[in-house]
Structures are given as structure tokens and as C-alpha cells.
Length: 392
Ligand code: ADP
Image (cartoon, rainbow, N blue to C red; front, side, top):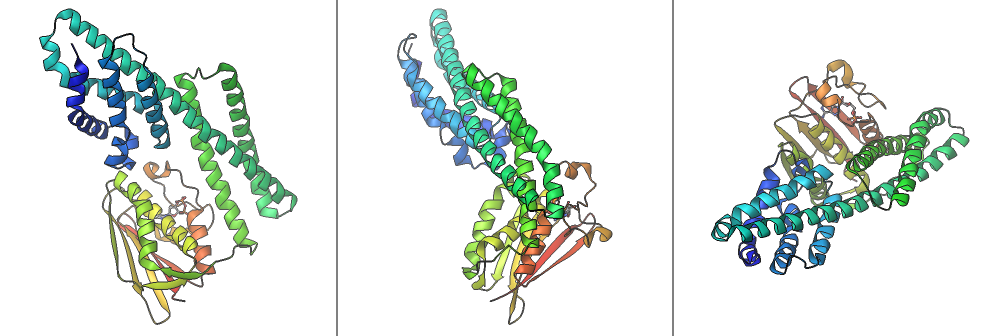
């Protein structure tokens, strides 16, 4: 029996059902931040490769599947899938394929059916193995890059310690211990990995995930701290240029939209009354808006996030970010712009990976732009952050 023809004939239906199943599977969380197209992209090639192998004999070499699933694994690593999520994705594929082949299988002899089921299983197992292989490679590459970045940051911290800047050197000193252990751990892992030549077990991959997660947070913490110390040392400079407000807002929304979608929050933009062009530092303004919007999303469980812009006066324009989230207690509102201050006591929200430095950076940038930032918030109802900036 030749099931490859059925697979090819039904490939569109199989892929659609597969993508749908991957999307709806609650345990595959990585898809929450991806578009339908991004999830679908490499699947047709994997399925086509499976059909090609099935059309040949059971002894045929699996090179087509190997290539397709290596490519698929690399993509999934880039998209932030966990190993368990990739395994689930293939389990769903197995299920979808069998549900489409059921009618054909029922018409074959028991020997034919057994042979076909074994072959399909073998091919999918091989695909999973190869996919993991390239997934691990992808992760390792990211891991090495992170390690290099950490090394550079470590050097920068050492330089600052020597420059004898009181508060920064104290902080740098505190950060050096965990940083050193992360670098030590990753060094050890990579050395072992080289000796074992890619015999990664599931727990190895999980260790990489853990190290990567804390390294990312630590790196953000250090970078944010350095950003503040640069400002405090008067080294932060703006690069103003004539900027199209609509383009800049679209860019920010494009970046931030997946975060809102992942929490099923609606993102409303009302910038009809915005000036068309302003003179500003576009990268820094982008940084301000991204920070305010990601906070709004982080501290909101249901409802909506609203971004508004308007011309405030002959010399000024304004942007506000409003959320329907947890709100900020009145006594904390004056402190949220201080470095390392975190007001939220809700354990659900507290567990997120904040650093307490975002608003401190935002308020410094706004100051540098000769602007003003205000907060208006009601506990349990939501918050509005308004930034007023000069038009020129
Ligand atoms: P973090 O990394 O903790 O979010 P920020 O400097 O961005 O640091 O914010 C400081 C604190 O201000 C947060 O810990 C949170 O308590 C509070 N906060 C900031 N934005 C919001 C918001 N939109 N809603 C409620 N609380 C907020």
C-alpha cells in the first residue's frame, strides 16, 4: 500500500489541522506569541519529507526527513519552543496523520497495516530525534552568545569598579558573584558538551533553559543599571532628528502587540490628534514607549491597554499609556520612579521578571528630553502614564 500518495493528496488538510491542534494545545505556550504563519512556516516541508520517505521502501535512507526536521528544529529554537513543546507538536502530527489515513488503513491487509504503522512511527521518531538535535545546537549557539555578552559586561563592571564610582562599584561587586557562577556553570557545561559530542539528555537541555533565563534577567538588570549610571554621570546623550510620529508609533505597536495578544488584552491606539512630525531622539522615545507599554501589559490581567497622542500646546505634545490593571497604591506613586522600587505585592504579578529599573530609566530619558512624566492611578482600576514632550 502506498500511503505517501494519500499524505500528499491530503497535505493541505493535514497541515491545517496540525497547525490548529498545535495552536490550541494549552501545553504549547510558545505559540501564544507567534502568528499562525510563523507556526505553519516549516511544517509543509516536514510533511512533504515524510511523504517522500513513505513512498520509498522501509530501508530507504531518511535524509529528506533529516534535513527537513533539522531545519524545523532550528526554527523552533529561534521561536522559543521548549523541548517538551516540540515533542508535543510531533505527537499531534502523529495523531493527525493517523486520523487522515484511517480509511485507507482499514482497507489494507493486517500485514500492510502493521508495516505502514511501523514505518510512519519510525519516520516520525527519526524526525523528533533530528529536530531535538538541531534545537540543542540552536540553543547552544544562543548560550555561547550570551556567555560572550556576559563576559563583556563583566569586563565593563570591572572597569567601573576600578574607576571608583561609589554606588556603581558597590552594585557591580554584588552582581559579580552570580555572574561569575553563571559563567563558570556555562563553561563547565560547554566543556562537558564538547567531550560528549552531542549526547544531550532532556535534563541537560532543561539546565540550559534555566541558565539562559537567569542570565537574560541578570544581563537586563546590569544593562539597566549601567544605563542609569551613564545618565547620572552625564554621559547619556540624545540624538535628535525630525521624526514621523505615526511611523514610530506603528513600530512600537508592532513590537509590543504579541505581548498583549499573549494575555488576550486589547491594544487600542488613538493618535489621530498627534503631530505629524516632531524633533526627538527616535530610539530613546521608542525605549520610553516600549517600557510604559510593557509595564501596562505586565501589570494588567484583563481588559485593555490604550495608547493616545495629542498636541498639548503650541510648544508641546503628549503621549499617554492607560491600562485597566492592578493600579499603584497612592503612597507608592511618588516612589515608582526611584531605581529598584517595586510596588506590587500581588504574588501573581510579583513573580514576573521585573527589575524595578524601567521607570527610573524612563523618567531620566524624559528629563533629558526636557519633558515631564505624570502618573494617575487607582488601585484595582488601572493606571495612566502621561509623557509631555517639546514639539521641537
Ligand atoms: P519593574 O521592572 O518592577 O516593572 P519599573 O521601574 O518599570 O520596574 O516599575 C516600578 C514599579 O512600578 C513596578 O514594580 C510596579 O510596582 C509599578 N508599576 C509600573 N508600571 C505599572 C503599571 N502600569 N501598573 C501598575 N503598577 C505599575
